Length: 258
Image (cartoon, rainbow, N blue to C red; front, side, top):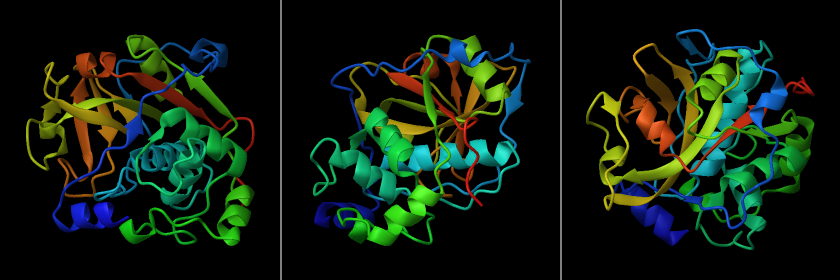
C-alpha cells in the first residue's frame, strides 16, 4: 500500500497484468455465433469516463469493470460505475496475493467477477490507501446483486476480423500485453504502435471498444482523463496482434439486476 501511495504522489503510473501460469481454457469466440464485421464500429457507451489506477497495479480490475459496464450500456441495460478495487482484490486472492499490490492475471480477475459480481464504485470507491484492504461484507452482498457476466470467450489477438466482429456486436473487449514507458505518458503520437523489442516495462490491461477503417483500434485506459485523448487512444493492428491475450466479456445470458 505504501508503495502505491508513494508512486501515486510522484505521478508514477502502475501496470499490473500478470502473465498466465497456465493458459485459460475459455471457449473460442466463434461459439458466440457473431456476424461479420462492418468497416468501422464502436461501443455506444464510449462516453464513460476512464478510471485512474494511479500508482497501483490494479489495471485488470479497472479494465474488467469498464468493459463490463460498456457492454451493458451498449445493450441498453442501465449500469452504474463499478468498483475496480473489488475485482482486483478478489482476483489477487486467487494467487494468495490479497495483501500485496502485485497485480493479477486477467483470467483470475474475470473469474472473480463471474463468481462474486461487482459492487458499485460508490460502495467500494477507489483509493490507493484501500488497495490492500479486504472489501466489506456489504461489498460482497452488493456485488452479488449486480452479477451479469456469465461468459468469457477467447479471441486470438492475431484474429483481427474476430476482434472487429465482437466489437461490432456490442461487446467491449479486454486486451493485455507488454507496454513501454512511452505508453504511460500523457502525450505522444496520436496512434500507438507495438513497442520495440527490449523497451517494454511490464504488462498492462485495458478496454478495446472500437475500430476504424484506417486499421486502428480504440482503447479505453485506466490512467485518468489527462492521458492522451481524455483517457483514450488509438492503436495499430500490429499493436493488437502483439498482445498476449484478448477476452470477450459476454453478458447475454443474465441481464444485470436493477
